[in-house]
Image (cartoon, rainbow, N blue to C red; front, side, top):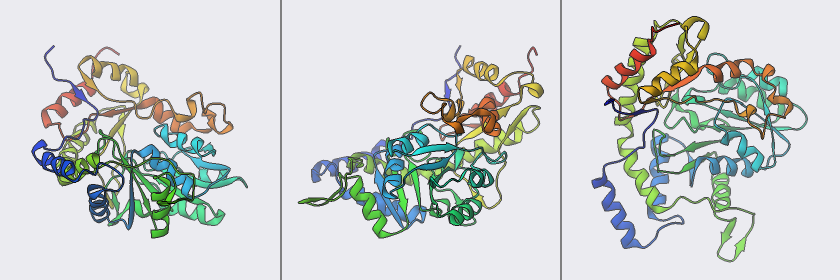
Length: 373
């Protein structure tokens, strides 16, 4: 077998010749972490590029979630989605909050505002919604429910770097949004993340919490943690930012190829593009309806792996199916039918800046499988 390996995502690797001068400068400055020159420069560049007012860099997206929830001083229950990466729920538990899972919208696979409304109790303090795959939530509907019940709203926008809706950054909704800059995200600082907040006071709060709660060199005013992004990763992020648009254009081309050539495959569906949304093309999930396609999701998943094409079953199992959560009353699968069906049918096809049309053609031909039924 001589076919090349194709993975669902690939590390974002900026040109080394652009990175080395920045690393040399860091060595000369002898300032490796704790709000150094490149950390400050990256916050400024990202604030401008993403069109957000206040952004705080942190060491990873999970810590961004934990810090955002902590800064809002939440208690009790938080309504959230079962259809996400497990860090979404873990961040609640780390804040001594109880996740309450509700079902998702069948078109977007994001939280359904009507299900949120039905799940609100006197113990509910917030909604933690996810723009899954970078597909935007119904922010108007979620905001309406939150306002009527006095709830905070946090958006897990780990998939939504540079996503816009009607010309505005999706990150500017809710009380806070968080980002992940993991190595396989469309934009990367190797490991890293950020909290987008709405006021200078809230940014100051996040910045204290990520640095042990220190307010000045002789005082600690809150029990914070160490969640700082170091200078090497900030420099890496500055270089990656210069190449994000080019890589996005490659992902867009591959996504369009998939749409064009998979649309007629019986039993295979994918998420619709939303009018007015400027996507970042971070993922391309397909959903396998065995009764119509003739093969199960896992049969197709295995066939792809046999041909050295490694998709991912994002997000399977549901968070609510994992041992830490499955005993919660809200984790009952019968109450989460849309999320459960999506989890059982999903495969994310490879989609990243290192793919070409030949790769996409090879993948499409395998999905168009006409083997034994």
